Length: 273
Image 1: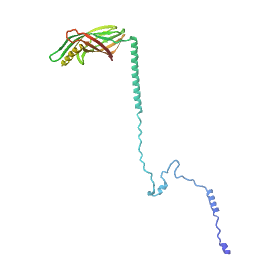
Image 2: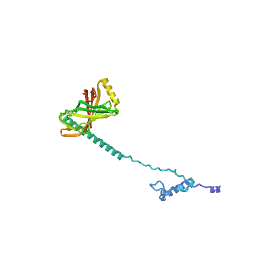
Image 3: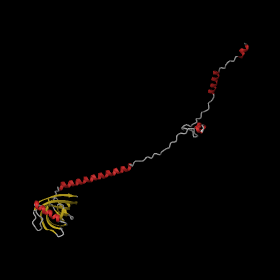
Image 4: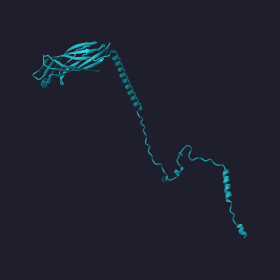
């Protein structure tokens, strides 16, 4: 019994021993810990240490991504803005020019109170109206035109380059021009104009004239005038414009060296720049 008591093994108090070891470790000075990755960087310059330790087959590489450069095109704002400014300046200048012309025209109208000239065909005499052997018609008309200027302060300069013609249903019978002259304030000018012309293949024309005279007793004629003029307001002479006059004449016949009666006469006047 005594030997049994002597051979009994008593367990050591491991908890107290471990507690003492932890106390010793706490009292011992701790070495500073060096970080594997420097502060401010996501990985070390030499890469992941664990990745170097792994075999090549077990290393995981990130997927390859191709970077496509993006080209940013700058819209042409400066060019468009320059075009807009140029267009705005052009429209503004055009508007100012139209406004200035309107103001000047309004002032001239209020000061001078211009009126349109008046024209009339007073007499028509045919000195030649013959059909030749080769079916050509030769015509010579003497026309008396009266031009009236009813304005008190406006004069009219009749420039060169005028054209006057006589027509029958689209056929030009004869033509001529007006003389150059100046027509003063409230002036009436009588013009004697000689018109001449020749029409080829006039057999159909002569037949139409004869039928027209037999059926209606009148022959309608159209007289057209294009006359360049300059208008004088007081002492101011403006730029050249064109008078356009169209007169409708109804005559009883077109016989040469015969009295021609004008049954009806009316003229329309307009002008263009």
